[in-house]
Image 1 (cartoon, one colour):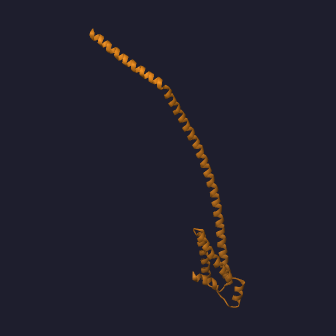
Image 2 (cartoon, helix red, strand yellow):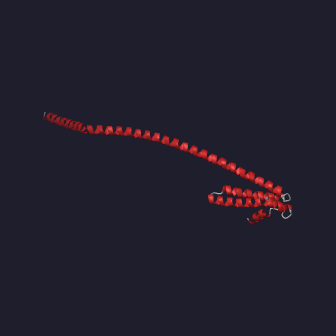
Image 3 (cartoon, one colour):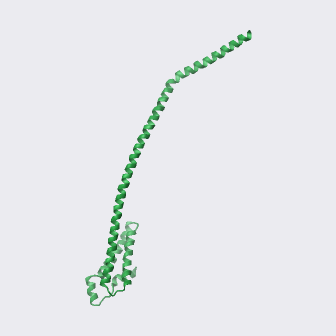
Amino acid sequence: MDNESSAAKIGILIMDFINALKDKNLSWQEETEDRRNDLQSKRKLSAEQIAHEVQRLKVEFQHEIQRKEHDFQVDMRKRKSRAEDEIQNYQRFLDAIEELREKLEEFYPNMPSALVLVIHEYVTQLLHKMWEAPDGREKLAHRLKLVDFLALVSEDTSPTALQAEQQGIRSLPSRTLEHIRKQ
């Protein structure tokens, strides 16, 4: 029986140990329950705050996209309008150059067509260089060359030049051709 009482004592000890562990665990859970509840609340609150912040950022991002799209559309309309204006201006220049060619042919009927075409091509190239210049300074330099050349052509086709032509003094737009030779 001694063995039975020892076994019973061991059983009681084990039961006491298990109960002590349960009590310790229970008291630990009771002690930390407030802290765990607080942490759970904070997690839940943090998750809600994060969700709210994400939603707020989505709305803000959508507004920013709409603003950028609007700004882009306004900018594209302005650019399109400027491009259309530039195309019209360029076409006016081309038309004026064509009128210049016709005026030269009319004013100098004895001038070979090839020379008229050379003058026409030269002034057209000046226009293209001016139009395609990458910066304002270069554009201005080409514009000044174009203005100088057009002034020479204008002088060579002026009423004074016509009078000289009628008197047999000039048969070609000499100043214009001289300008082209220097280039």
